[in-house]
Length: 317
Length: 317
Image (tube, rainbow over the protein chains, first blue to last red):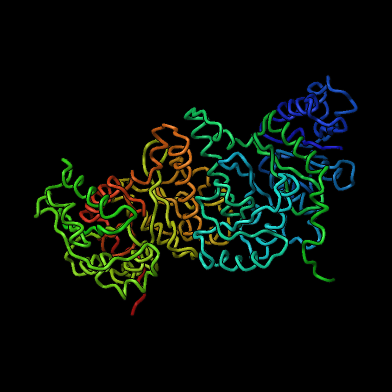
């Protein structure tokens, strides 16, 4: 299992990225066949990774660096030797089985859609956020930002993508799908929610349980919570701020509050594409990189993507 | 100053409503000219309010009761002797200066729009939620639920209504208006946010500071945070669940967390109509009713509604 990691991506790269690689490869639970390809400026990475076995950690030299705020499509075209461009190239060619970066998020998403390509029939890839439930289990909220404006058919596909992730990665049997809405009854909501409800209800590939409200997001009422990327992104960032305020600033020690820490989950997989791509938080540290490597291994070695075959109606050419 | 209160509205009425009236009238800070009209089934209210001075607490008999889940428009038509119908009738006729209810929310909103009427030029009334900022100050998020689907012109009016409330009730000078969005730069967001940005920017009645993200909602970046009612309602209910989880269930004692308790603020004013109407939470208790009476007095005795004159373009008839 070959996992590519952009060692230059993120605010604390390459140091934290390299620490994460070390932590991952030295962990007793890491499978013996896991090999990490650290992609970045070789002369910076070599001293940081010198002590790791050469057959488990392979440095791939990338001479260009992409800033966090560079234009995604432009950077992808004009910097073919950046760590992100090289990573996607290797992934597309099958030289690696998964690719991780905490760098320029826009470039990661454009790369995932343009170089790796959506699965047949998928209208738009989606990124979910893992949601820590009060009872300790974990659910999924999607979309959280790629798709600001959605159609019912897109939300319907997110429901399939989210259910598939919940089933194969979170190991939830017949995941409950809830439509995020402002009322419980059918017929409530904005135009999008009202027209999505019957579409989800008619979808035989998912276990749709109806609407869920803002107060139910953390309550383990649905394993997969579906919304447009505008709403999802605002929820995600609000929850991140809740952790920041109560844990980091107000020093509250609470086990459940700790589950709001992004580090706990590593990164965000891009769903609906035919390879494993993980997008990390810009502030990713050793622990987050370690978790992302673990997450990438789990996804790439799972049946998740294969099981999506035939789940989306494809338009005859 | 005559304040009408639906003493039958809310899960714990009439007992908690009457306790709230007592607490309010007995508080040293309550102005001497405040008179409460307790509207409800007189024989239930009399024993609960017997000890209060008859010139400060006047019982208005209402023989019908509206359930929390009755159809708003139907109940308003078919139950003219319910406490909500009587309250709106008294408010419309100028017999009271403000009306408060923690009963059927839909009926309160329909009554506010149908019986009290929007101010000239106002497309849709709006309900805001008070937002506790980390620094102890308070802001406003609107809309939080009446208007699930919005146009840029509606969000623009919410900005004026919210600024007006912030200025005259929260006493914020030149309140900063932020557009809730998924990125800071102009041009980010869904179609609604993208087309609302230039409209807010062109509005000379407000102090527009640009986009703010989900992580900034609690950060005191904007005094008035503008969004559609779908997004706002989900944020409001999510924040209520945060309080419920961490305070009520996990027993975390934290001063800032306590600010998330709905009781702290009383109720929600209906903005954009020509009278003072406060909608209470269904679970309102003594403290919440007390706060709502105080809030109603403040709003009704302020310049808030008068200052809105001329702020909205009216279509020539």
